[in-house]
Length: 76
Image 1 (spheres, helix red, strand yellow):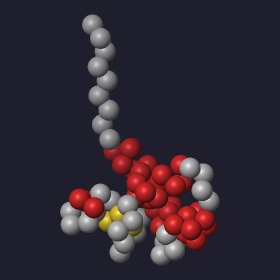
Image 2 (cartoon, rainbow, N blue to C red; image 1 turned 60 degrees about the vertical axis):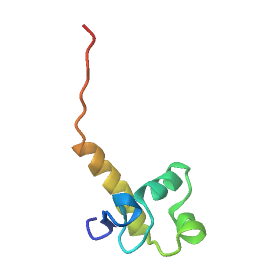
Image 3 (tube, rainbow, N blue to C red; image 1 turned 90 degrees about the horizontal axis):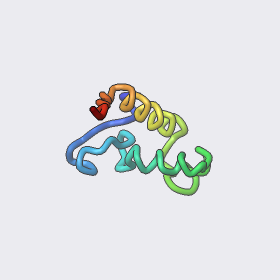
Image 4 (spheres, rainbow, N blue to C red; image 1 turned 180 degrees about the horizontal axis):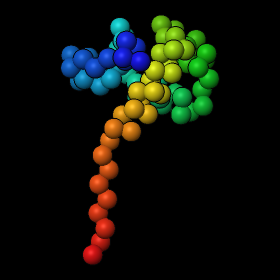
């Protein structure tokens, strides 16, 4: 996945993007969340992507969430 997703402070303010593009992981995930099939995302939105790029975006999001610390505050 690391070769497919990159974070560069000079591209989209450092948001994670598909490597070699200005396509953010967030943009790809929003299309996936809408239920748009991978092939359609590629043909209608981002023809420079490959299915492996879309899968890498999903894996990136899963890894980011698994590394996130969650702090729960219990009311007294």
